[in-house]
Image (cartoon, rainbow, N blue to C red; front, side, top):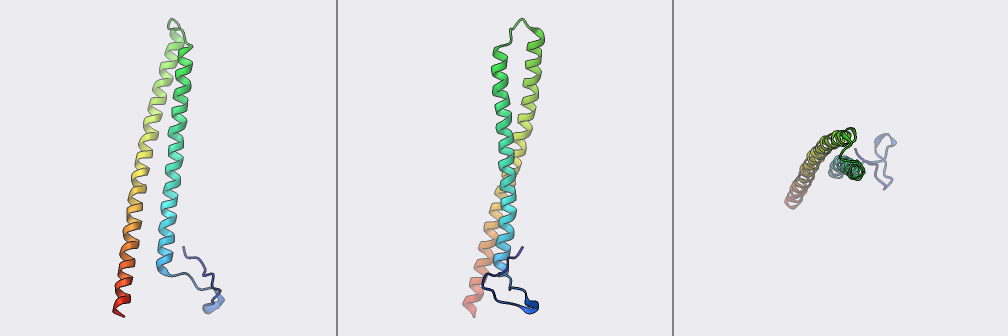
Length: 125
C-alpha cells in the first residue's frame, strides 16, 4: 500500500524509494475507512430507495377502493414486504455505520499513538 516517492530518488534495483512506513500505514488505513464509507453511502441509498417505494405505495393505496378486496390485499402485502425490506436495509446501514465509527476511532488512535512514539524517540536522540 505504499506509493513511490515523487522525489525521484532511486533505491537498489532502480526502483523509486517508497514513502515512509508511517505514511504507508496512514494511507492503508485511509483506504479501509474509505471503503467502509462507500458501503455506508450505498446502504443509505438503499434505505432511501425503499422509502421512495413506500411513498409510491401510499399514493397507490389512496387510489384503491376500500371495497376492492384484491386491491386492498395487494397493497397490504406490498406494505409488509417493503416494511421488511426497510428494516433489513436500516439494520445493515446501522451496522456499517458502527463499523465505520470503529474504524475511524482506530485510525485516529493508531496514528496518534505512533506519532507520539516517534516524537518521543526523536526527543531522545
